[in-house]
Length: 315
Ligand SMILES: NC(=O)c1ccc[n+]([C@@H]2O[C@H](COP(=O)([O-])OP(=O)(O)OC[C@H]3O[C@@H](n4cnc5c(N)ncnc54)[C@H](OP(=O)(O)O)[C@@H]3O)[C@@H](O)[C@H]2O)c1
Image 1 (cartoon, rainbow, N blue to C red):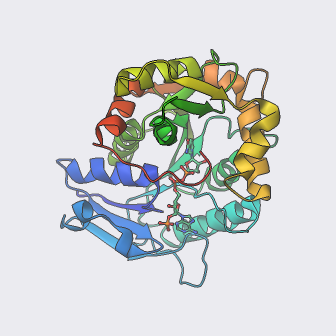
Image 2: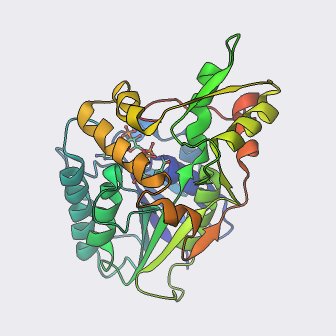
């Protein structure tokens, strides 16, 4: 049977990488990708007859209901918002809409895959990760098969380091301190591969309902490890690390995004640091799937220009 899989929002990093793997799969699933602006669908996808881009805003701003009627599986990535709306209200509104669409399409959708984050099981003191806690809680039994993937920090976030490596004294800023403290990271390519696998297994038994796992890379990395990987990837020597100490995190984030969201990112980062609520999840995840891609290989692609990422948002 050919699967029809809906991905929303398809413009997210996780959505895009997953669609790429799905379109390459020999079973040739049909992909329905929901974009606020379908013109953003890349030509590598739109040129594939198994791909269709449809318009939809997951928060419901000024458009009709989400339609999953023809889908066997749905992949939902809770998007962040920086447009003035309250993060928790936004997360609730989005997840409620996804849940309503699943209920309406109950005869077709067998599997829901929810993208989440390490630490999202905690109810509070996790900052912006409340977005994921709310989505996981609302959606955990909204389809016959529910899979919740809690991922570590994206390795691709370090693309921002390349902005400050070109000067006479190359440096990058690290939100993670002390500099030898290791954080769970994962490449978005590994994310796409694993998410595609779980979607293509729709209809196959899961170990539990919902099935929840952590997704990390092959190892964890400290700021010192990031520096070593940057030095290998770029051939530059003596790259300086400018540590953003915990008491400066708010100022750092607020230089990029409004105050109300900067607070959420500060709290999330502190929760990940030593002694923080999420620190244990980073070090000793209970049920972990590991990707294969090393940080140095992700950074090599940015250094060679093979990969580009618009550096925007918070990281
Ligand atoms: N970044 C990380 O390191 C990391 C780690 C673990 C988990 N996560 C989780 O990954 C998820 C994505 O976070 P991210 O910061 O990495 O974002 P992202 O993948 O960069 O995606 C943000 C995209 O969401 C889309 N979007 C925003 N509001 C939307 C709406 N109302 N309707 C439809 N699309 C909308 C926007 O697309 P357009 O502007 O093109 O419409 C935007 O490009 C979050 O749940 C986050 O907690 C992230």
